[in-house]
Length: 223
Length: 389
Image: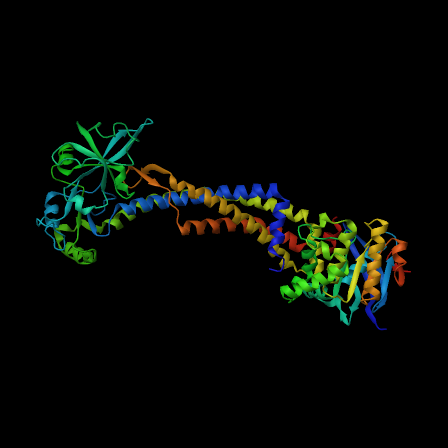
């Protein structure tokens, strides 16, 4: 199968006060379509930075990142925002749901950036929430849901636009074991049944074991 | 507007206290702003209602008001013989020869104030059909009697029916109370023109003449005749309504300028209040902003959402301020009219344009207060925003 994500020779460093802190050194990585890959490594190893670069919310200092034949490192900020809205689904450690919006409205958010009608949006949202098993919690606000349920709403939000890739940053990091297992099961299902390409950053060996492939980062190098 | 308005509205509920305080601040400024405009408009309305479209007032040129106008008897005779003046069934021209003088009266609460005493001719009843007795009787021509405008009753000592006030070396009995559709006449005493002239030793020199034309359309013709007569070159005719509207301009303008300067200074405080509220809203929602941006919302969507939020706060404040200010319509106050130097009583009056201006004023406060915080939200770096948990 062809690589859907091609990361080639990227460098990334951050400016901290007067110091330049290198985060990623000449990283290259190919991810095939339908792959489920876990990025592991100690804190500060650069795994989240690599994830952010692939997701298009950050830009490399050098090198190219091609996702489905588009070099996203060359896109302007506004093109990148549009690209993200169509191609990337985000799952965060702390779910990042908007507290004042219901589960339904949170899942609907990314669809507001598309040309779908209200009726079509509703169909998509209901389908996504049904897939994560929360069709009966649509009108609940995040604070009325458990952590596991919140993360499932977040996953529904990530898949509602039918993106090419799903990026998950420590998706189980804030959950108890049972909820974490449910979320991992859900991600596995998205990968096996719906053929979603998933890149997951995690500390948790149990979580990483669900992925098809594990890559380790250490001090900015893939090992 | 990609980010739904409900997002902004529901955030208000999350921050009830700060949003509430900001709304109250803006409401108070809008209240003062609207009240000042209502005051100026109330004065205009009162004075404009004083005059009629069909009546013409003759004044000395360069006089700033009725008080400083003088019409000697020969001028009165020339004017009264001009064409286009309406006549009674008895063929008498409908003209009121009016001495207008100012007297000092004691206010009920203490202190003195200037009050207009207007002498009128019998024809003035035809000239001013909106002047109606509401209590007592009309004064008798030839007697030292007065009728009092209803705004003055109770505000000045001895101003009730049956009581007497003293001026020009004599006592004048109050015999009736009149109203004049809320116009400025309601802040005056009216008596017999000849008695007033006599008491003030004015001979036959009145302040103004007010006359009725056959038809309001004939004013240009009347004015042409008037201007043609060289003996009248120091005098000028004006439509009564226009004259009183001009009289209100100085006063209304003064109130407006003073009021707007004061409220603009107040508004700086309210704008800063809105700004602080919005900065804290942005700071509290940094992660949300990062999330929205990563989902694909653009900087301008974020900017618009926060500006909308600030605008909504200010418009809610404006609504409250306007509702409170509109309650002032039920109050009537009196002040010194700078044009006549006499006390005038008027009501606060609201108009669609005052409401509109108040909304614009509040919206400006909202946009100015919300702009910098919204820019900060829009400029936020996604990675930093997401990390700020």
